[in-house]
Length: 59
Image (cartoon, rainbow, N blue to C red; front, side, top):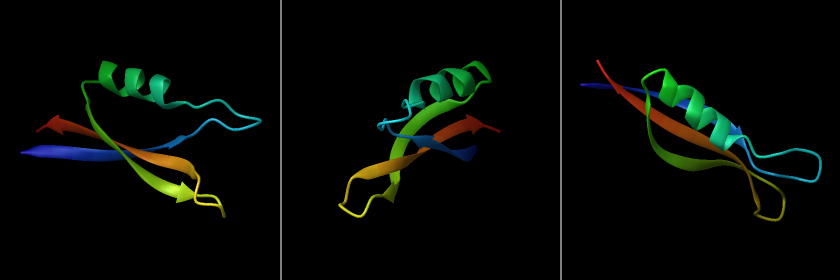
């Protein structure tokens, strides 16, 4: 059986950097396996602003 966690990641914008690589490295070092990214937030023009990064770990 697997346990899953969902971690919010921001996309790159005018005043911020995308943080997905750091988050994947951090959770991988803790034994989590990256599964996928699901868009979770959008601007008024349909541009993706946030993703949920999905990680799994065998229990």
